[in-house]
Length: 258
Ligand code: DGL
Image (tube, rainbow, N blue to C red; front, side, top):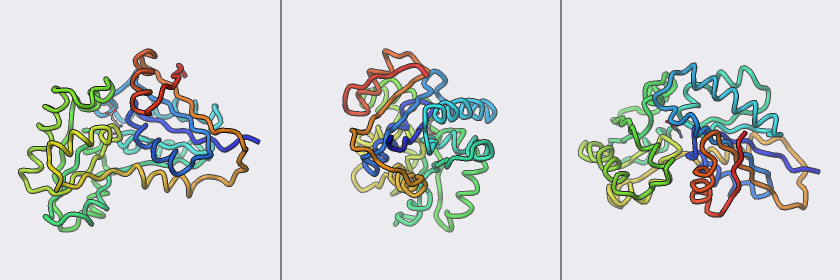
C-alpha cells in the first residue's frame, strides 16, 4: 500500500525550506514538490495571476496523488489560500509571516518583517498585524531582488550581501531585535542575514510550525515498508532547476517539467 503523499508548491525553490521541515516531521511520507520558477517572482504580480498559477499547481499536485497540499509561499497564501479552499476538498495548509512568535520574542518592542510587496500589502497581513501586533512596533520591509538571488543559487554572493544589508540595516537602525523571514526563500539566506545583523538579533520563520500543521491535517494512512520518495518538478529551466534544487535540498535530485 502506498504511503500518503504530501504536495507542496511555491513560486520557486523557496518552499524547499519548508519541505525540509516537512521531511524531518514526516520521514515516512512521499513528498511532491513543484516550483513555479518559470513564473517567479510572485511578489509583484496581481492577485488574479497568483490565483490562476496556484490553481494550476494545486490541480497538478492533486493529479499526482497528493492527499494534502501545502502552499509553501507567503505571497501565494495571501492571494490564493481562501480561493483554493473554496475549490478543493482536500486539506490545504497555508503559511503566513511569523508575526505572533516575533511579538512574543521581542525585548526591544520593535519587530522587522522582511517579505514581498504582495504579502505586505495584503489584507491577510493587515489582519495578522491587527490581531497580534499589540503595542509592538512592526516595521515592514519589502525586498525586491532577493527572491531572484535565491532562485539563482546566489546564497552568499557580493550582490546578495549588498541587498541583504540594504533591507536589514534600516530595521536594525529602528531598533528591531527580531526579524521575521516572511518569505520562504529567505531561510536560505539565514547565514548571510545573521552575519550582517549580528548574533543578538533573532530570525524567525514559520517552516517548522507549518510542518506541525501538516502532521495535524494528514488523513490517517497506512505506511508501506518501502523507502519514501521525493519528486521534484519545475516550470522553469530544467538544467538550472536541477542544479539549484540539488544544492538547496542537499543531494542530487532529478527535476522534471510538470
Ligand atoms: N517564496 C515566496 C514567499 O514566501 C515568494 C515570493 C515571490 O515569488 O516573490 O512569499
